[in-house]
Length: 137
Image 1 (cartoon, one colour):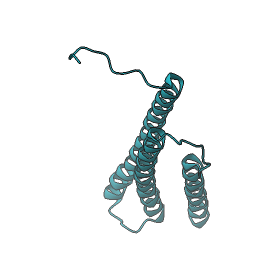
Image 2 (image 1 turned 45 degrees about the vertical axis):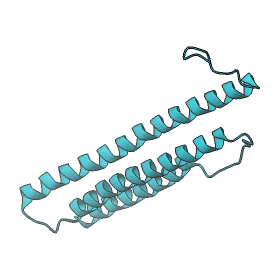
Image 3 (image 1 turned 180 degrees about the horizontal axis):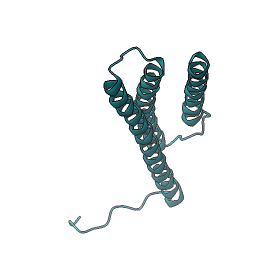
């Protein structure tokens, strides 16, 4: 066998190509999660920086809307970080499943739905915090 000899042909080329398509799809999915999580982390960081500047400008550390905004900023950062870790673990698990020869579809909980529910909860908290802050002023 020489150095330039091609590798042996797989026994079932269709299966190998399907595995490659699934692997590429898993890579695209991970990249989409990375973009989404980066946006969440960046948005949370931006909220926290704006609140810090506003808080430093007033000199009063007990303003409720600023505390709510800081909480929301940190919640976005935490959600982005946790979602990124979950997406990375899911990607690794998916690649292991593709490498196996007994690959079978198994339904799983949607990570996107979980993130959407948490974002909806944070939106409701922000909405009521703003409404209550406006009513109390």
